[in-house]
Length: 102
Image (cartoon, rainbow, N blue to C red):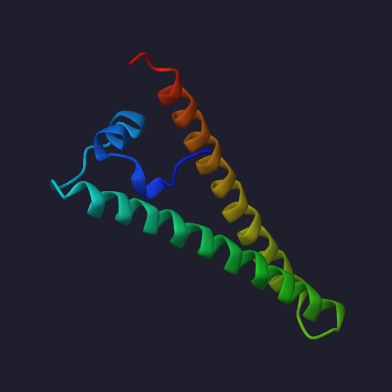
């Protein structure tokens, strides 16, 4: 079972992402901030997908223009592609870390 994102140490995040934190925060605060950021990104993606679905249903009822539907669907597609790319990077980083010699 994969441990929750919040339990990953900041040094592990730095090695996996190559990004140094702007300030030295306690490990629990950094993990919570990263976890919150991922949760917010996932919620944003779901909101875009739900909005696109709603606009599509309105278009079927004749209440929305085609341009609105295309804009909403394209926005949802971009958000979904970004979420998939982040997921793939996280899985790759986790697998790399799990293969490291202790």
